[in-house]
Image (cartoon, rainbow, N blue to C red; front, side, top):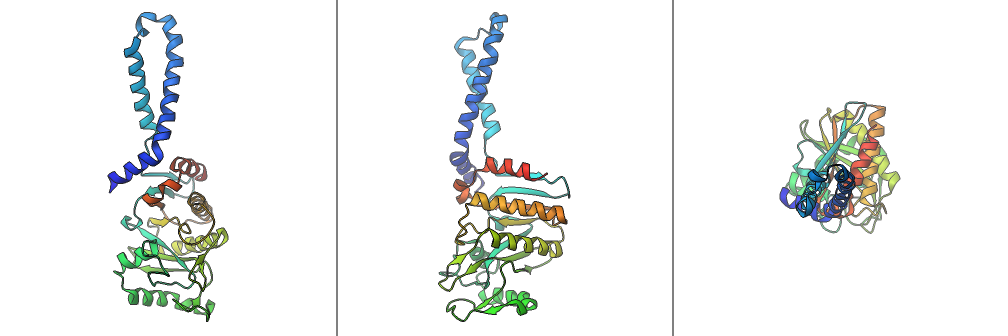
Length: 285
């Protein structure tokens, strides 16, 4: 799996960057060597072997500089927290996991919840497709918030009780929490709508829930709103939104030790990892 991810990163992201860096290094060496050869002609009169050596050296340096990494991170200056960007499967992470949901907390796979989505995999892989158990735990976690809900009588499929956008609940155990945060509005035609305001509201409530129940353990979050939520925002913008929200929340009050923003390998075509790394460095002031 790891080898396949590296190959995808190399072919989809890295080649153009490596070629650009190669010509930069080769041009730099050429600029430096030619004037030096005027003063040291006997030492620097390499001929074709010398140029071939410069090609190899430039290529090696370009690969070292530009070969895509599966993970990179930056620390905040204050508090003692870090943000990591990682290509991989969120369910392989050891810490707590964020699951994006809609405002009625639907769980039915198929037309309502896409099986390949993070929420769909959550049901299949964590609850072994046991709808009854997951629904019971969700209802128990939502019970203290029942005064905030309203019934949607025109919704004929799935659940009918709507909760405010941003509603966040916690499932799981002390060692493995699952934070479910409602960032999208489930229409009666079973399409989900969201926008930057909805996502920011859900993230704000999410960080508060993590403060209360995360016990400073690492938290992994997918790029929520990037699949069927119709946000109109590209994955790159959503990733930056998550990073910025976490930084702002952490500056206000400590949230957790490390946040890992997960990028699925199939999505790397739509994520410029180099640009995201530069953004991360600038955001973690």
